[in-house]
Amino acid sequence: MEHAPIVVHRPSATGGRRVTVRGRILGLAYSGHDLVVFLADAGLLDPDLLLDDPMWAEWRGGRAHEWGAA
Image 1: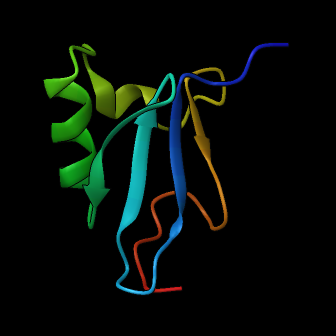
Image 2: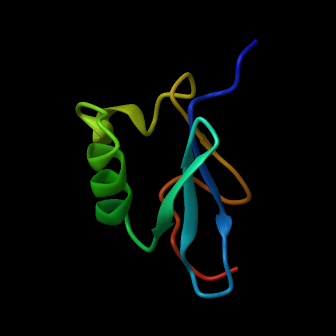
């Protein structure tokens, strides 16, 4: 089975989460809005609809949509 193309990595000490798409780092998101903007800028259509679909997005090291510091 192939991994989800979007990975939202564990929260950092500052509360941001690194975001990658197919291994390419898009940036450090501090909110759901940041995440959606990164994904839209990467060319994904309706990225907010993909974030709760495990075929598209994998949330590592914390619960989905959680932005607090580690």
